[in-house]
Picture 1: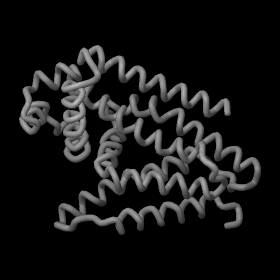
Picture 2: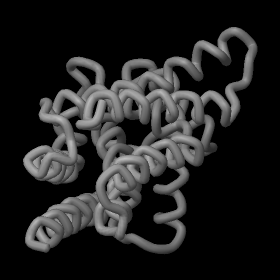
Picture 3: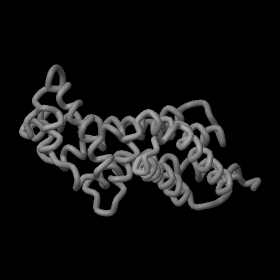
Picture 4: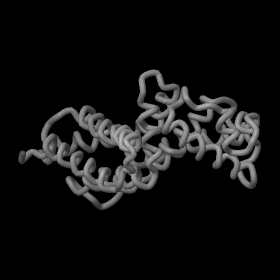
Amino acid sequence: MVETTRLRETVRETVRDTVRETVRSAGRTTGRGAETRERILDAALESFGTIGYDGTSLDDLAAGLGIRKQTILYHYVNKRGLLGAVVDRSAGELTAALLEVLEGEATDWQRVEALVRTVFRVALEQPLLLGLLREVSRPGSPAAPRLRSTMGPLLDRAMAWMNREMEAGRMRRTDPQLVLLSAYSTVVGLATEIEVLRAAGLEPTARTVVTRRRELLRFLRTSLDPQR
């Protein structure tokens, strides 16, 4: 219960900081300005998630949205600030989805499977999020520290839970951080696979995601199930 309260407070603080920053730069949080900000974030997510941070041009974003570049700068100050806002929104959505599972009734392997299914459901509903995670995971990414500060408490809680399961003998003793990083790499790698398929003229289907989900669950079973 204490862990849950602490995690919720951390998430709330992150959200509050994001809102304060947006209010300072935009001057208001509702109405036409809010709609414009959301449109900018949607376009930026697509650009950062497909052609990367360096390949993203604020001029091109503005032209595609039918607004002036100064409008983007009015809301987000610069390109790094825009990337940070996109990461905050995406990480917040992913964190909320995972918290639902961590605070739910599922236990043991049911919880592991529920977490994996939740991540892949988000990937299916928001495929651009995978590209963004891959971009932010690159060495030297300007948004990497921001993602760590947002997702860090959630990962710490996941590792603490895994350690408790290992101590109780319900999971094989191993390095929980290494397991989580391997799982993260599998999810992020799906973005690359989807790009390769599209480059070959093939549109990825739900089957691609389901196959990777099944492989990840098999990997987790092999790594953590004490009976194997």
